[in-house]
Image (cartoon, rainbow, N blue to C red; front, side, top):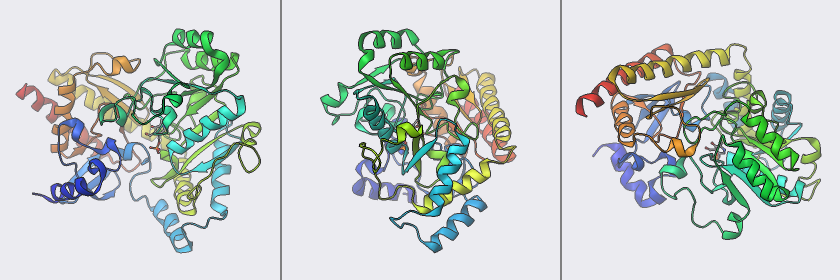
Length: 431
Ligand SMILES: Cc1ncc(COP(=O)(O)O)c(C=O)c1O
């Protein structure tokens, strides 16, 4: 038994299902013990058995600057000395909030929280408080964290790792106030608003979905979503927990036609520490306690350590050449993997936005969750294991993206492509 397997035995005894988040489990891949990671640097993991991997997991999105970036280490290290949690305001949170507002016109004011789940959960509450309405509209296969209201036909870990698309334990009363519709289908949204428009508080959307694999909006879709919602007096909540600051310095929804009233951020803004944010116009944010009647709070919210990591991360991401570089690296890796599949005769299709992409094991990229679920499951599983054997760590799910980070080198990308070539070739030999 190696060290990962031994830890897995202990983890299963001490932790529910052996993992602290279902998406980390290798169970959906038909595997037993996941790898336990001891350390990470740049774009690489080292597991407890001393094997190294190039990883395109990026911690499911937060890691954008690469593990152990010197600027993050330096700033977090300094803050560690000065204290990690005060329960009183600190300068860093003001600077961080100002930086977010400067980067995102829709975000005049923010609230910092500790996770994407909290950001979305709070934005929903605020939308309900602002409109006096209860109904939330979301889209099948989008994932917005694990608050009750959004665990209806969800993607990401909920799609593969148990709990099902609709978690048990969510009260019927909560479900009654949520509608989940197919992504990229304006007619379905029109029909819902025609029937129940006056009850809708908000439409909650990932403008580019990252949780049913990477699925982009069809031309005109996000404009249409915004127009329909606003025509009926509903708000638009732009969930950019994955894509915010991943694809550009700021958010991507407005560039693609979305007109958000509230924006949710998480993952990349925290540089690997626990940091999320939600915000919108001053008029809306005025409703949040202590000024207003909508309560939202957090012992760890905007803590000095997380904002130190966040500020260092934003400093790094603000450099001019960052996003073109990430885009070029993403293109190289994605095209290389796709070509490797094609030359081995394995059917795949690709959807990529900058440094995130999904290689779908189906002939055409999906437009919605129904299509995303229709793929060659066995081929994906074999590819996942073959890549792991080749020293490449991918998410153990077809519904997660591959991510490139600033920590990846040319060699890492080349190694990823070469591994894909061998993995696909091997899959063909044994099929
Ligand atoms: C789009 C989106 N929103 C919200 C969340 C929830 O964030 P967290 O896991 O930090 O609670 C996620 C997590 O994957 C996400 O992808």
